[in-house]
Structures are given as C-alpha cells and as structure tokens.
Image (cartoon, rainbow, N blue to C red):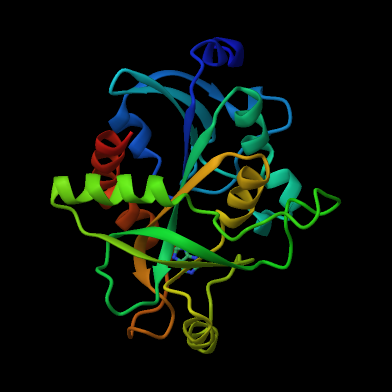
Length: 252
Ligand code: HPA
C-alpha cells in the first residue's frame, strides 16, 4: 500500500496513537498501512511500544488516518522534526487531529487506567515547532471546545468516565522527581507526559481542529510508594486501549 493510495481515500480526521495505545488501530480496523520508513521525512519510529506506521482505518464508514507511533523530542529531534507527520496530514487534506498519549496522573480525582480529555496544556519542553515562524500564533483555544463536547457526550453514552484536565509536557526522557510533580501541581497540571504539545501547536498553527486524550497509565512520581516503570506504562495502556477504541468509534 502506498501513501498515495491512502491519500486517495481523502481522510479528514486523523488520530495519533501514543505509547502502548497502538492496538487501538487494530480495534478500529486496519484497511491499509504504510511504514513510516517508507515515507520521506518521517523515518523509523525508535521507541519500544511504537509500531511506526501510517494506517488507514474506516470508522462508521468514514476514512480515518491513524499515525501509529510518534517521534519524541527526547530522541534528540527538533520540535520541527517531531511534527513532520502533522504537516503531512495537513497536506493530505486532514482537517482535524485527535492526539493521544500515555500520561502520569497528578490529580487525585483520577482513576488509574482511565482517560483524560485534555482541556489545555503547559508547554514545559523549552521548544516549539514554530521556531522561525509563524510568530505570535494565538493559543487561547488549542483543544477544540465543540469537539470536546462531542467526546464527552460519546463517553457518557458509553457509560465511560472521561476525566478532564490540563496536560503538562516535559522534555523527558527520564520520568519526573516527586519535587517536580509537586511543582507541576502548583502550576495547574492534572497529568504529565513527554509528547503531544508540539503536535497540538503545529496543528493549530495550520488551522486544524485539535483534540487530545491522555490515558492515565500510572500515578506521577511520589504520589504512591511504587517507582515508575516503562513496561508497566505500556501494559496499562494496552489494557485500556479497548476503552479508547470504543470512545473513538462512538465519537468519530
Ligand atoms: N511522566 C511522564 N511521562 C509519562 C508518565 C509520567 O509519569 N507516564 C506515561 N508517560
């Protein structure tokens, strides 16, 4: 399957799947796929738990483009590089993108393995894909209010709890210290991760509608006696993938 064949389906909606959430693509039904390695500018995804391919799925009869696996700043890439996929989606005619990730829960109101609809973000990564321009882009409504209402309604219909909150993005690749988590809480963060924000900024700057969903795979550092483990983050993500797939099927 080639990229042009996927483009020919004219998907208007795209989904980016984060760590351990790759199985959501299978659950939605893979119609066609192209490995990132075969797409100029995207290269191979290098993090365990990331399949690294562009998938065409059909959700409720409509074509949906799925980026299964993403690149991260902590791989040593620039914010411009990690957002190449968003610009490609835009070129293919995608008008709205739903970004997903695995995140550590900071708010004590959250359930482990639950989903959080991102209402806003804190960019604490020290960079942005807009370096060099366009300058001074408005970011007062990154996560589309109407799309959020639709996602909340879909979750309610399914009887799913969909938490809401602010996502803080740090550079990584190490997890946070307990002191950093206390700082993030003071700053207004409800969940913490290492992705999504560059893509959200790039997509907004291109005029795309953006939504974000975090899967709460662990309690952030210092909130529980356990230490953090990437394998556990992936395992919890897998277990909750079916919930996310059901929500996306109902909402798209
Ligand atoms: N911190 C940062 N990134 C993460 C976490 C976390 O606790 N869990 C999953 N991704």
